[in-house]
Image 1 (cartoon, helix red, strand yellow):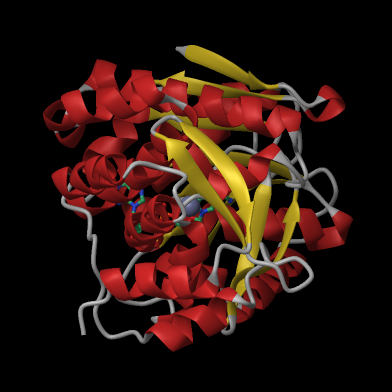
Image 2 (cartoon, rainbow, N blue to C red):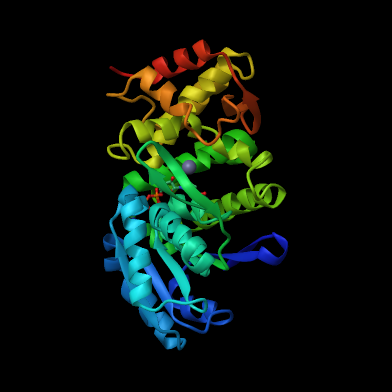
Length: 361
Ligand SMILES: NC(=O)c1ccc[n+]([C@@H]2O[C@H](COP(=O)([O-])OP(=O)(O)OC[C@H]3O[C@@H](n4cnc5c(N)ncnc54)[C@H](O)[C@@H]3O)[C@@H](O)[C@H]2O)c1
Ligand SMILES: [Zn+2]
């Protein structure tokens, strides 16, 4: 078991990473939760792990309840949000209840947004089950639901009390979902940590096979990297914006595709290809490094091109993005592999050209 602390003063919390942690769920949350625990999960994850989670809670004397929400981005709709709040009322959930997300980033983002808003905030615990959720979405407190016109438009920064990342749960992930988590790992490598980037290149086979030591190591590294950034900038006003590499174009792709077809990690993969070309075109980054990044993305069978969306639609959607400030586009771009920088307003024509480069119409 490894523990990384997200150090945020009174809002600090531990992230536990290791094998077999789900069995210890009840014991782990008993220290701060006495009331009931309401699990928010999706069908495929409930079928695999719901019972173990409920049993572990019961054994620790915590009353478990379970709310199932639609899988994937449908979990993050306004309708699902309203339904879950209704269920909480039926269950008489109150300030001493704990919301426990059990699932990928979609279940986590929804559960977190519910926890942040229900009665102005009730306790939250994340049990991330996808690689993406373990390396990224469960850390740092960003919680949100989507609007048809913009991804994550309604949200909050609301930190959990605990994150329990049981790496053995990853073994049931479909291989496509492993790639999605790797997309965020590549992002960390590209803008924050050259060694991580190299490691992802060297160990792709072990990662795809989900080798135990390699996964524990990668999850711990990613959590530490993100925890450090979040400690410096919890509210996303400075250095944390760097974590958006690939996401300005990526979110526009997701919205344009109406949150179907491409998952978040895949949209970010294409987004990183496009955005690194912006970086290369404005002379921030070597074209050679941009190619190396694209090769790494391909190595994990992630998409580098996209079909069925128009450049103008994407440019238009990008102007609704939260990263736009006073009409300025802000991109997080690599300067070289392992280093990033925030860039305001790269020339629109350069961005359009980079996007055209990843469209396959
Ligand atoms: N809050 C943040 O800081 C943050 C960061 C990155 C991404 N996100 C959000 O996360 C979401 C994507 O998360 P995701 O990629 O985890 O998608 P997801 O939650 O849809 O999970 C992917 C799929 O894997 C299944 N699954 C999850 N765990 C499993 C397991 N152990 N075994 C078998 N199947 C399993 C799920 O049921 C789902 O079908 C996006 O909405 C994105 O915006 C948020
Ligand atoms: Zn992301």
